[in-house]
Length: 324
Length: 127
Image 1: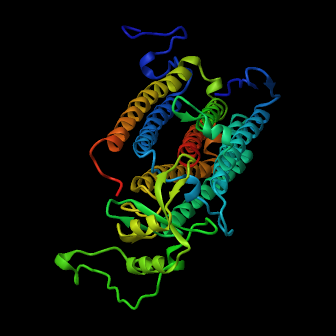
Image 2 (image 1 turned 135 degrees about the vertical axis):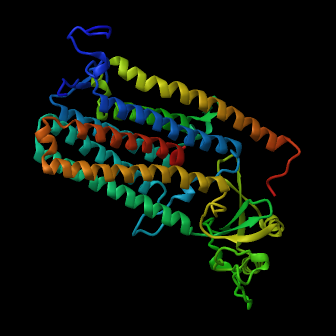
């Protein structure tokens, strides 16, 4: 009793017994982590907004980038991301149901719902891997100018995007990939593109039906289409072929776009992955009856908080990366 | 830890009989909101795209507001903030809201300024 403060129910404040916020130590620490992690994600999304506002007139349009659905050909913007969002919300629901069953001390139900949550998380991570693979592979290909801007191609009659491999001329040229042992002053280069710059340029000249689309967004909110003369003039600025995306350049437009895509969805995907791992650990603990013996399922509630947080972040990533 | 759950959402407009029912109710609500977002994102109604409010398209305002609505229900019902003490709830919610709005305000203003410099200044980047 000496000098320490005591509460009404005679608990020692320094012993961890007093809980002014009505939450246990572990739960409180999980909230601490979630708030700080939320600030990290906000930092990423805010810097995405910064770069986007900086290049507001040339930023890629997400609807034209993420148009693929596995096993289906054609143009389906947003459908797959919407599916991923739904999967994550659904796994959040099974997680709350697991927490709810835990409150009622129903071990079997907790096991079932934890299992479903893990499956949902795995589907989401798999989908994200597929998104990445599609994004990295690219679909139409583009040219890059001296200034690092991207030139895409469109068919004049249909208005549909034209792939560079479709119209590129077949030139009898030999291209050698520069490697460190053969290169000039020990430099090397990334793997060669399927068609060379010359082949695209010659193919473009030979095919009057192809036009160039620049990064600039016009008043209708669409990318600017050049006419044939402007296209031919613009073509002289091109310095290299870009296929797909990497951290340096991408065929969709602004370089920062791909960087932010990899960084933000990658960091989120890493969170989902760790969430699945933690869920698996807790899942086995539930099966072993650890929490049944402990008398409460608060551990399930704590990983649940983390899992919902991952869902919460995705809601924001979905909005700012795919919708806005 | 088995404290009582508050079983009403929409300020008491919708009351549920059990916590499980409330969870499914919130799921249905979140799914409807996501569906609205996706439909608006695909159709892009001309009225919402052409008109803007404080330099942002109405469509984007709708997206952001719907996102905050979804975030509210995930935090309040899935993360059980509705059942926590109000002091904990306020500490968790208002700290990030204050810091993030400050950060966003500063960064977006700075970005708009840089955009002006790139556009008006004697600097070529789009070539």
